Length: 121
Length: 151
Length: 330
View 1 (cartoon, each protein chain N blue to C red):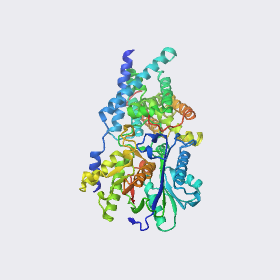
View 2: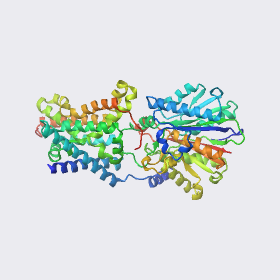
View 3: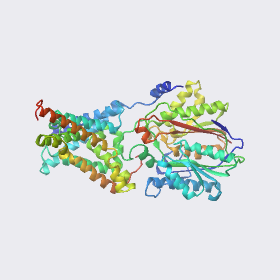
View 4: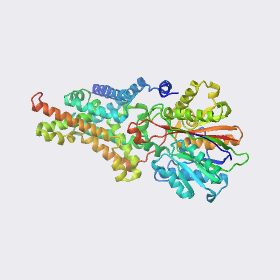
């Protein structure tokens, strides 16, 4: 179990380092960086590789935004296998709904509870 | 002074991002967030009937909940300034993008403000995630259909 | 274009009001009032900024002992969409109003126009100045204030502040406007909206050198040349440009910048302060007082503005900039 934490830490940290390189060296905005990482996650799943990463690193692979691309592709592929062409569209959010629904719900609640504050400390 | 000469001077004088230090900070904070994610998923596996495969969903939701609290209290901004991609790349960063936009737009009401602007920053992630997943799945389906690869 | 004021329009009084965070400013003892609430007890940032403008105008009128009805013109602007905070504040002031947009350079462009109206005999009392509000400006130009994006060391902090000057007829012992330079738009191809100083320094350089040349002056003729919000890096760039022209470093010390000094050496503010309220609240409090107390006899106020919008940045345009200068003497 202790190893799973270490692997999660290392793999998750390394994905973030790639993001930092895209921002600092590639001079990309956070929006561009995250979009690229999502596409990378989707493509890796196309080759069936992201699953290995999840098996190895657990949350180190499921917590970074790359996993979002992975699970979208995963849903699309699973349904495509069952239903062919139509499944590509219908299956997409089968696996990923939790991230988006959580963000929407907590975004709404956050807007109810908080006010933006321009403080420095 | 012409434009080229100015750009040379500007390049010399403007501070460069401390790339090595930023990478180290991103690695540490990103790693810690993922390790916390690992702990949360164990929590769901041990105390609820989730498996290693399905624990990812409640873990992501929990992390986004924590991101909401940190965003609301103005802490995620400070974390972001310190960690850069270390706090932007994990899903908590996705949550922060949605939640900060929602909080900010509250003054324009829930329909015109929160509803319309929530995905102002995070929308591109959803767009490119969905579109790339669509094409990846489509290409794979074609390849399977013509018999190049199997599922 | 350099304007020489024959009738020497005077700066009769000045006022600066700021938000709570500006308590940390090195200039805080010069501000007339520092509010405790960043929204000024209003429910939106934009309305808060409107109250900020109103409050600063009221303080100004009180200091000058002038009534609302005696004001001929209100000339001002801010950074929010279509400048509603300023226009809404003008609704309450109920005087002839011209809204001006030159981004952060409005702090000086407004005073130049007030000087021209006074010169023309069209105005006895005109309020001129500018304001900015941190939360209102950040959300418009960059990200939501609670978004955790890493800002580079070149980024500047938009201040919540308003600064206004009451411009009127020449008055013995009051600082007066001797000349002014209306700047040209300068674009040296800078694209980074988180490096305003780098974009604006060439505009400041262009306006300062034009002013000195047309007026047949040297930098050392001034007690101080105060730029608005170039920030720490922008000021260095401006000095580097002037140094290339053979200006010596003792002379370069005459150049100071509001954004550079505003928050002292606090690194959390990165390259310093910015915003229309930054230059306005430094010029129309600190610099004005230094002139009244006789420390400075001749100053050049140079407010710089980056004429970008979120739209122009997203469409990949470079950042055109402008600087306006006014020469004050006492």
